Image (cartoon, rainbow, N blue to C red; front, side, top):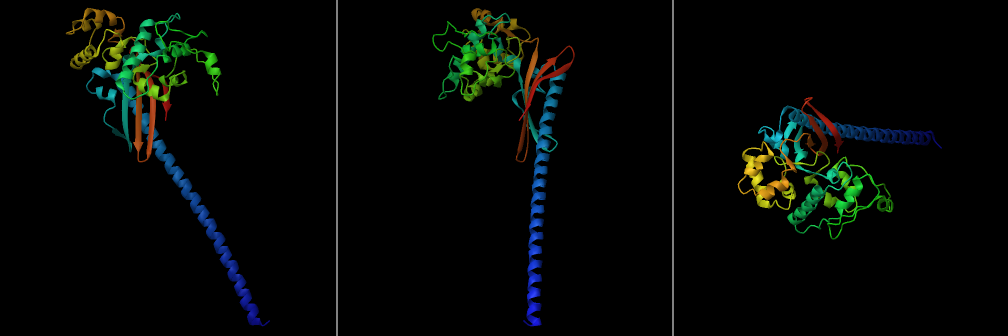
Length: 329
């Protein structure tokens, strides 16, 4: 072998080594660049999520300030739009929308039994009529059965006796711990009041579709009386069999002109029959002793959306607004 051949082979070996080193370095650089970009994207995603999250939380603080400083949101023209979810506004770089619900205009499902453990027949009858009204309102949807009412009573009461409502012909029997323990994934019957309306999903017979249809009319707080200045038409109709759609609409029309200052003013409404007034006068109010509000604050930025839902209680004497529950989505 000549010196020339040896030199060529040595040069070729060095070239292979150099190329190998270049490939290794390129792979390392590519991996480092990919890792850096992944971390950068994750950091950017985290930043945007935190940004919309903080905007949604700031929306809750705005709602707290409004509830604290305004005597009645529903009657104050500057804030009345918040009750229905007004136009979005900007907080930071995100668009934010607020929806505030006065819980005093909703049916309290925790009031189906009295404090001493007896069935609260007027509240039960109201819930049954509300089911009828919701079923009639949405044609084509699966019927909501009466059976969820005795099942709900058993879910929130402290005893283990299965409830049977004799004034309902069908679907009149509840469910206690035995039913829930027999499920494929057993769980215990709650046996105490609900914290949120979403907890209804644990109750026998309540599907996500059922909850979605009933949720706008239900609450878990308050003394059970309905605020005629904030209740929807369906909730007003559910108060009694004596209240028809025309009477409920008459109440809505009057309060748009001027909110009711006393329950007695209902009696003077044109067309308000004495039997209707006497049927509902003990079931309604105009200034609830306890004021609860459900607030949904939703912020969005590009592909990020963040929602915060809070249950707030106003304490007029102390001039404070307390957060009872809060969840972030």
